[in-house]
Length: 267
Image (cartoon, rainbow, N blue to C red; front, side):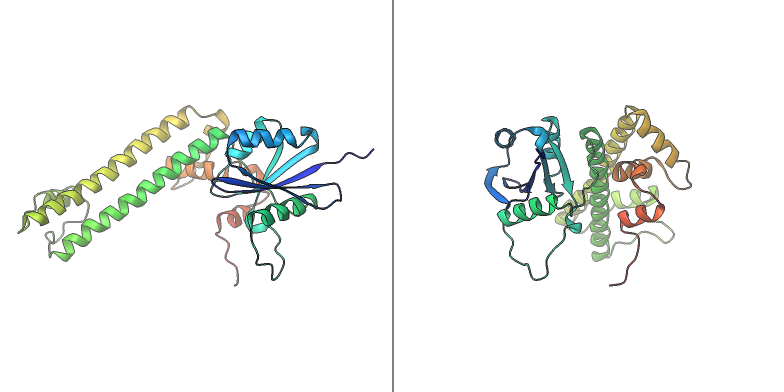
């Protein structure tokens, strides 16, 4: 007797998961909506039958890979699907959670979905750290812009030849006395915010250095190898290693450029 595999499509949201299953050549069945909680997922898997006959997919999105990790720990084969590569019928504009789950299950059964590479939990933790540092850099840039625009708006300019953000420039800023107390309070807060963001970045840099020192040998080798390139320091190397995951999943350089969005195309 031919083995029947159940293809399960899940439309995952922050609080709910819509579930549909495609079995054999039969119609796709919508199983309903469950809470996006670990216990609810365990109960669902228990109702779906033998794990060997089961394969699950859901779209990559803001909920991350927690569901993938849970299912794989339970022994369920699971794939995370690239949303941008899901085939879409022309004119199909009706979207509901149940319809999306049904569509995923149907396309998964027919082999029309493209899975993405999924990092393990340790790799994702390091990537979170690197992304948090990048966010702190953006916060620092905004804080610096606010300070510069405040000084400009109030007609405060350093002496000619004093370059912005140098030690001499900071000495001038910290010694400024504005005409009104309210202005001085604002200036102090703007300066403190720039200092705060700089301290955050220093802490992130230290945490990244410690993480790399304790990382698996393979990852350390990749980071070290990338730093052999001109202009690539620790943070850039770690960012490339964590965002790309494993370079072995790309067959040639063009695929890497396409993945990062650096390949221009005509629109």
